[in-house]
Amino acid sequence: MFFNTRNVNLGDHQKIIDVMPNWWGGRDLTSGLSKIYFIHFQNSSFVTLNDGNIIGFLIGFMSQSIKNQAYIQLAGVDPNFRKQGVAKMLYNEFYEICKKSSISTVTSCTSPVNELSIKFHQSMGFEILKGDCIENGYEITSNYLGEGNHKVLFKKDI
Ligand SMILES: CC(C)(COP(=O)(O)OP(=O)(O)OC[C@H]1O[C@@H](n2cnc3c(N)ncnc32)[C@H](O)[C@@H]1OP(=O)(O)O)[C@@H](O)C(=O)NCCC(=O)NCCS
Image 1: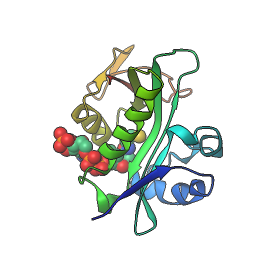
Image 2: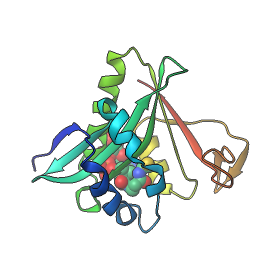
Image 3: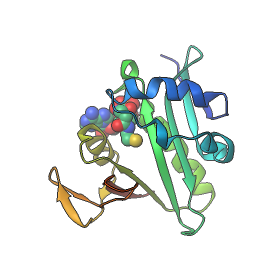
């Protein structure tokens, strides 16, 4: 199968919002994906296309305050195209743009209930950072994305 990866544009926003709840198994994380990312972080955010349709995306940015770090806000792949290396391709694309900006560490986070994402990040070589309590057997950082929105934090040196 032929996959094509390119930088995001504003026109991609609604298409991704429309598929996200299905891609996340019914969980609605669309509030984490405002148009701002599709306007101000185009250079470090990507979509993968198959036959003109978006089958994967990665939204990320370089930290403004920690000069050697970047952060992946959200990444997802169409369930029909999983386990074919699409996410790995998107992450590698992101690492390449990071390296060009002398960034050596990529960070991200996920919900403690998202076992799939935790396993995926571990497969991709991310370590789980020490948090302030344990939930579902994982170190978590409380209230990371807002009140009650606890997260497992990841870090990988690239
Ligand atoms: C997580 C997700 C992005 C992975 O996408 P994918 O295209 O299937 O992943 P890839 O095929 O590129 O796999 C990359 C590596 O992760 C591993 N992996 C992928 N899915 C996995 C899973 N469910 N459990 C364990 N490992 C997994 C692969 O085996 C591969 O490792 P390898 O190179 O050692 O073989 C996709 O399942 C998804 O969109 N999930 C729902 C949204 C989500 O949770 N996003 C992540 C947090 S923002």
